[in-house]
Image (tube, rainbow, N blue to C red; front, side, top):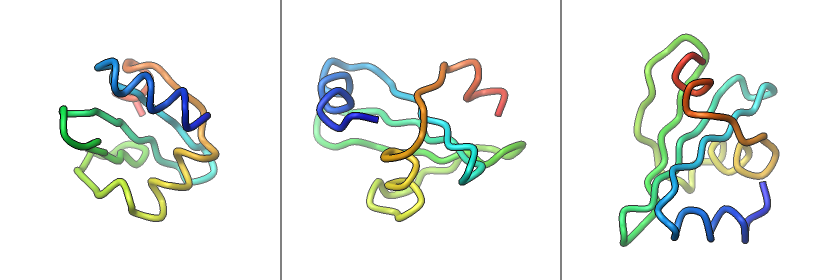
Length: 75
């Protein structure tokens, strides 16, 4: 995902969902006014909070495709 677009959307208060089939995981990104919180969800499992600096999260942000909340929830 384009980093400038991602940053603008997060600063605007949007929650962004990104799915990466190669990593078999999806991330949810939320800006809380001070920092971006990230959550990762592997297929068929519950999401967990994870640092945005985590290598897998970075890979998903760079190479994944944006998805919807419903697709993220069903993943």
